[in-house]
Image 1 (spheres, rainbow, N blue to C red):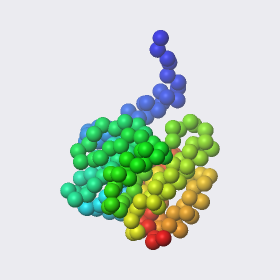
Image 2 (cartoon, rainbow, N blue to C red):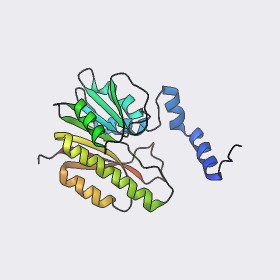
Image 3 (cartoon, rainbow, N blue to C red):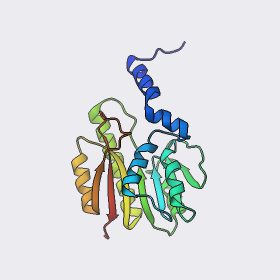
Length: 209
């Protein structure tokens, strides 16, 4: 017996199918509409450059990796990690697992090797429950995990880009970023829905400890 969709899920599906970014992503062969968020930031800020070592956290289904890998050039490297499986991409080193687990972190650090990381990207998001306080807390927690990884693995002068939700804990996280990096900017790409609390925090040039 099939389960009837709720009115909210039916509305979401209809909106998703009519979304111009979804249609454009399919037309261009990108795996998600999120690629247009990173592309707009890239066009404005020139974040991704040839020869970099970059880590893409929360990479699945792979839209950001699709955009980033060609920009890194033949001398660059991109390691993509997600708790969800992700189909392979050319010249992208993919790890499936939760980087809070020691075995997964060891695998990630093994791939990084002796080269310091130039750029950490994080499009991680919690499974949204619809309960604002819980979703907000979950997103800030993921931001903190990504920043902890960046502090440990970015080279001095390295950059960090992470998705965040505006709300409780946002200002405190932003303050911490500004202590760690020379410059922090808030970006709201056009592909981020206007009603969404989603923004991207762009932190440039990690300070020397």
